[in-house]
Length: 167
Image 1: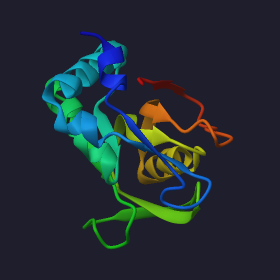
Image 2 (image 1 turned 45 degrees about the vertical axis):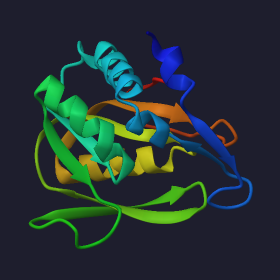
Image 3 (image 1 turned 30 degrees about the vertical axis):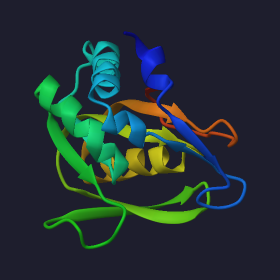
Image 4 (image 1 turned 30 degrees about the horizontal axis):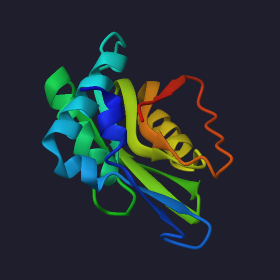
């Protein structure tokens, strides 16, 4: 089996969550162990030679596959939270734009090389927010990995490191 099997599991919903947005539903992949394992293996193949200490997982859908990747690669996890007061200790916050509004992103203070992971890249606002908050918190982002990209948006991912898509 290859990644095409996994791609065939994806469902698309027009005008969700708001008019003009096409939602990429990856839940059928998460429900299907075979599709999920193919996806995880393809992600690992793509990032196994990148030097990093942590996967920075973007709330909340980045937590799903990102946790599996961190476990299989024996890497630490940094949770990037999108709601205030969900992390203890010294916290850093940035505001960023979404495809249908604005949001915040928070991270705990730390150091190390980080791979940013999320399920979908839309406008690039969340990825840019992740990059900024990680830098502010003391980390060094080195790569970003996304499962899919929403093609109807003008994506502006202005991070200085490379990014890749799987699906």
